[in-house]
Image 1: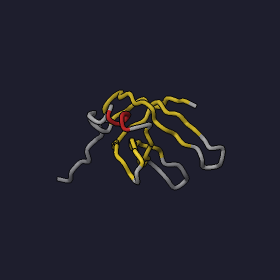
Image 2: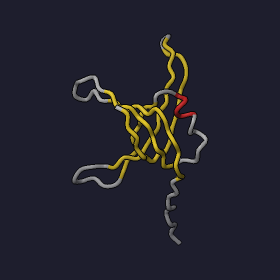
Image 3: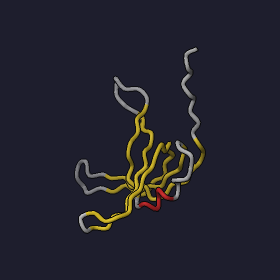
Length: 105
């Protein structure tokens, strides 16, 4: 299933190389997700897998953090906990400007 979502991306990394004789081309982004639960408030950062390093390379020169529209596919192996979301495209929308903490005088 393909879906489109708007997320705040805080960071990204990619890697292309060989490990244990296997060629790898990977990318990950780190996005804000809301905490849930009775004793939770705010957000944390979650790692999201990208289709390949090219997805990350397309946004790596943007100022972070930024709001983006991402296209992702969700797959499942048919078992509990076997769901996986993979980002296939990222379209930057706007930079997220955060308030700086006020310093005591």
